[in-house]
Image (cartoon, rainbow, N blue to C red; front, side, top):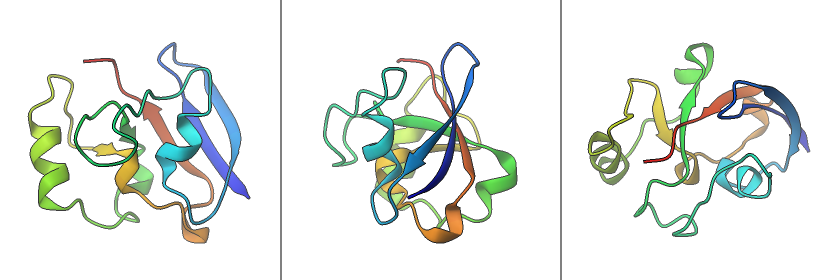
Length: 104
């Protein structure tokens, strides 16, 4: 387990234990204030949309074309938007800070 910092939709920051090797979405969907993750990580619904803290953006692998395309269709898309189902939580990401995006 490692630290994941999550800012909920009310702006409250939480520190949670995240399991290394799982997608960030898998931790977030278990939280009362987390994401819906309706498609279960298939990169088809964007209900796991998060904003990655700028300090962490460069540490994540680049988004693949299907993720970029889906994100571009969202009204709340920002330059630091990611689908948490596409981000594997690795030891290097301990301390990662994400903000849950507004519902679409």
